Amino acid sequence: MEYINYTMLKEGVDCSYEIGIWSEIESFMAYNNKKVVKYKNNYLENEEKYLLEISLKDYSKENALNLFHKLVLFLEYNCLTLYTKEFYEDRTVFNLFSKSLDNFGFFIEITIL
Image 1: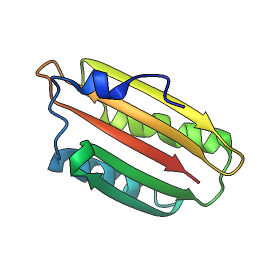
Image 2 (image 1 turned 45 degrees about the vertical axis):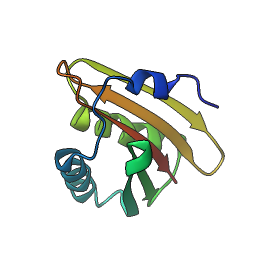
Image 3 (image 1 turned 180 degrees about the vertical axis):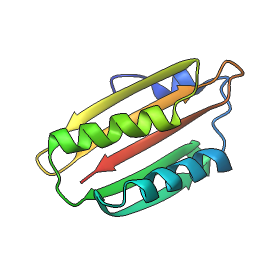
Image 4 (image 1 turned 30 degrees about the vertical axis):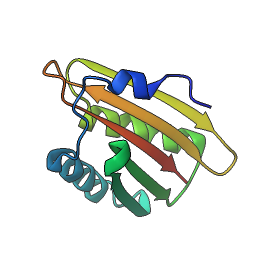
């Protein structure tokens, strides 16, 4: 279920691939390697969206939220940050959008298992 119309939010915002965002994700994952078993980081150019799948060593709703909030603080831009979350028994799915005052932004769908 999409609570926020991210397509509408992204209008006028440059969400194209940004090596800085990619590098920050990679750096964050390396720093948290004691909690993470593996991860996949992809960028869908036609949707201007990153896909990040993270497998935790000890999955729980609390551990997923904790890691996600740390990631948000690590990545977010200074103007606007919004996210939605959906909880399932075996995973949590987040949609994260953030933008700068200069209308640069990113959109990431994050699945934590």
